[in-house]
Amino acid sequence: MSDSLTVSPTSDPRRVRAADGSVLTVPAGWALLPPGDAGLTRRVKAAGPSWTVVEKKGRKIFSRGVWAPEAHITAAQAALEAERATPAYARRREADVRRREREQSEYEVDFANAVLRFLAFSPSFLPHAKLMAVAVSAHATPVGSGTVARTERIPIERRAEAAVIAWMRHQTTAYDNLSIARVKGARREVRRELAEVSRAVLDLHRREGSHPVAACPLCKALARLGPGQSS
Image 1: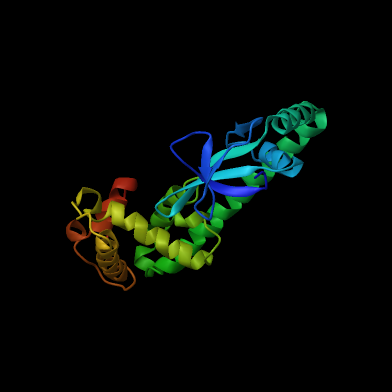
Image 2 (image 1 turned 90 degrees about the horizontal axis):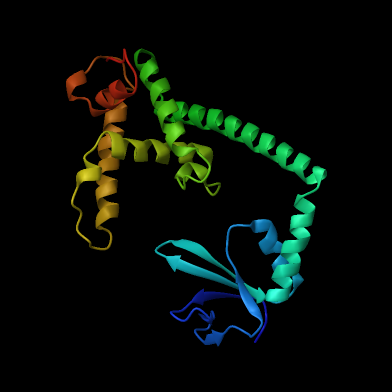
């Protein structure tokens, strides 16, 4: 069998498992192209039959490379290296880098503003909101961070809300030091309970009036980030 397939690895490096559960042996003359170069992978797949190896761990799926005729991989590598050696390619790469940097900067600003809208702190707590928006955005928006802020499956408003709750879970609760039972759903329940606590803390800052700074986990967390923050 030499169709283009998506398969999973087995303990034998030259045997893979197909979607129907059957175990396939990699054809003679094929080689494994490691993951990491999307342009090269696209060319190899376009050149003919290939088996894409993916492995699921929990909810995440990891690429383990692509099996394909070694001749296709060698030819694609040579063609791509020649193309990448040209001045035109270098100019495109520079333009792409500038574009991505510009888009990232714009997204960081948009995300911080979405965090501010979600926080909706009262005027007296506006400095807190600004400091928190910067901190949450800095943590959540970097490319490759894997945080909810990097997904496009939900609106930015929901991304901002989720990022704030996640930031508070680590900065204003004892979550990182908790011993959570290895029972299905236990960690999710702990996170739900802590989220309710975090929302209550946020509500304190959405209405005018002072509250004890020493007893406020958010005020203490923000004080660690910047001077002059008080309630």
